[in-house]
Image (cartoon, rainbow, N blue to C red):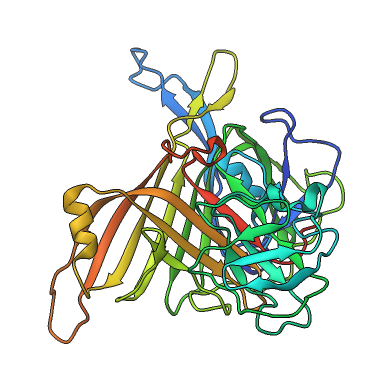
Length: 411
């Protein structure tokens, strides 16, 4: 008699059109994972009836719910659909599938330290004006080894024009006095929204011919953890409605294969961005950073239905932790004065594909450092809360979080 092995378990998922109803058309997708805690619980209670036999007369279901987390190593594109669902928005894609559809040429000297100047204005989805202030992108510049593949940031104060992108001075290019042909920009942007998406998630244990499908699964939380000497991890916590089991898959179509990009680590990629207060962190080094995005969802229940009839949204709670080597008290000064700051960090693979996370306004909630024993590095442990950038003059930038995806064209 075979027993199920976690080594051959396969997760799959598909977006739902109707909450809690698994689609019967379309193709599901395979999902990589390092572990999961998917679960279905029925809350039951024993009757309080008093009888002469002193026995319990019945046990009755009261409510039910599906829930659990999916954990993985952050990889380019693999979790983009779930990431968008967690932020309750869609990716705004530049060009064609996140890369300029038509290449452009720079003017002579058009690849300068803090600007990119095109000889002719790119149009349509490729237009420079589609980029936002502060947006990150990867530049492809064949024939220019110094700038090809660089990840740079649009100036936070100067919006792109039809032919010129002003760059942040902290992400400079190397001046090329000549003309560079076949340049392309790679970027897509995601920010927080209000459009909820539910999924049917299936756990397949083919070795024992058992498939568990969890329906109505809404991403309530997303967590990203990046640390030195470790893989960068991502996890999603779900709230849902129901579960069904079968000897064969309950999801439709032919499963779309997972992507083949490498996992990220705290040191992978030639570009690593760690910013605080609008500039790269200097004078100290970061040991780890974590980000938690919580929709504060709640299960909605009603008569005549076992399980949720929907998942209600709550207040966005975006927070994180930062562990840095104790070198100065600059962040303590901001903490004590209740001065808001900002946080930017990146996660990129060895080929330059990845993400830059921008929290435009953060408040340092706690600041702590101690000596717990001798012969140890003193660390500063910081907790922060992300706020909406309500004072930004550009309505599209009045958000809590931005995720810029840079890399090869998406599929």
